[in-house]
Each structure stands twice: as structure tokens, then as C-alpha cells.
Amino acid sequence: SQELEQSPQSLIVQEGKNLTINCTSSKTLYGLYWYKQKYGEGLIFLMMLQKGGEEKSHEKITAKLDEKKQQSSLHITASQPSHAGIYLCGAVNQAGTALIFGKGTTLSVSS
Amino acid sequence: DTAVSQTPKYLVTQMGNDKSIKCEQNLGHDTMYWYKQDSKKFLKIMFSYNNKELIINETVPNRFSPKSPDKAHLNLHINSLELGDSAVYFCASSPGTGTNTGELFFGEGSRLTVL
Image 1 (tube, rainbow over the protein chains, first blue to last red):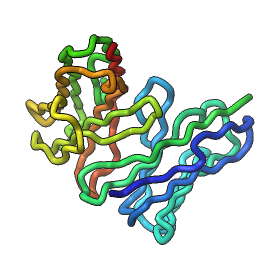
Image 2 (spheres, one colour; image 1 turned 90 degrees about the vertical axis):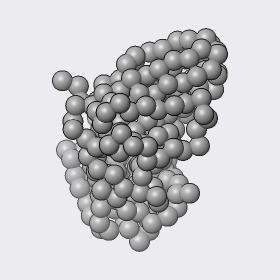
Image 3 (tube, helix red, strand yellow; image 1 turned 60 degrees about the horizontal axis):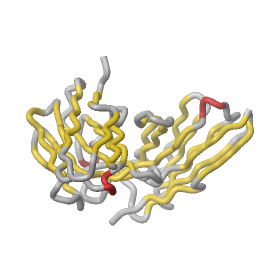
Image 4 (tube, each protein chain N blue to C red; image 1 turned 90 degrees about the horizontal axis):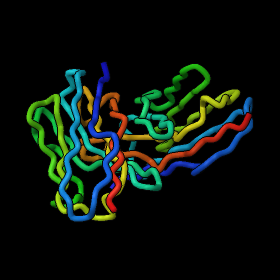
């Protein structure tokens, strides 16, 4: 079955610093989704990437899809405390029936 | 109005009891899901329904039974609760399915604690 590996598992950065989170799939990707979860809340959709080389940005968060490497990266520029939370990457499973998720990256931003 | 709403938000119960979690979406989506998030925050798909029909049923004990009375509702009933069932259960919906799943909209989660 397909698996999504995220790295790092957790990250502590100082406010204002840049950071990158990676997501690697064990099988071919048919679209990659990034979500954010704040403690005690549901998941909030950030962005979806569907084509190799595609890059999307939302405020200070940029995500890119490298289809050949079966990998996506999420980059945050000038991190702020509001960026803290758990970031999860998701992909449609091989059967095409649901999204499966990586184990998440917990981000803490110290001020 | 909340797009995907789950009730209850918190549930504390004894081992062996039976409990239900309800989910409703007002987005007009065709597909609904139940996910389980364990203590390590790993989010795992349990069930998927498309227009009231069961699409996916992952390796989940028979004690878990989803019911979809209409495409806006997907409830989860759990029989004979065990300690290992303690988790946060998330309901979600999406406009499509398969590679056209699109964005998933999640509820706020229902935290189940089994004592």
C-alpha cells in the first residue's frame, strides 16, 4: 500500500526564520494535498498540487511538487507564531477511494 | 454555518459500552469519510461513503459500523468499546471521489476516551 513519509517529524524554529517540510510518497502521486492542524481543531486545507513542477503560494507558505521524485516540499518564509501547528501531506490512495496522510510534522515557532 | 459538524465533541465512556458519533455536512458534497487520529497524531482512513454507498472500508473491527441515512449525514456507531478505541475521530466530506477527490473539508473532531 502507498505510504507518505514526512520529514522532519518535528521542528522548532525561531520567529522570522525560514523552514522546509518534505513529503515523499512510496508510489506515484496523483496529486498532493497539504493541510494544517492546530491543537484541538480539525484540518485546514492549505493547497493542492496536481502537476509535476507545479508551485503554489498562499501568504508566506509555498508548496512545490516534484512528480518524478514522488515528493513535495512545503516552505514557510519568515515564520510567525501563527504558523505553529501540525502540517500533514495527503495523497489520493492507489484505489482512488480516499486521501491518505503522512504522519505529520509538528512545527513550533518561538518568539 | 459550520460546513462539517460533528457531535459530540468530547465523549468519555466505560469499556464495553456502545456509543455513536454523528456527522453532518451542508456543502452538498457527494462523498463523506471517517478518519481516526491516534495519540501520535497519525490520521488513518476508516470509511468512505459516496452518495450513501460504502466505498471504502479499511481494516477496521466489525465493532465499528458507519451509517449514512442520506448523503449529508454519516454517523459512526461503535459497539463494545475498548481502550484502544480512544482517539480523535474526524468526519470529512469532499465534492468528488477518486483522483477527482478535491479538497477535503474536515469537522473539528470528536475526542473519544474509553476508561
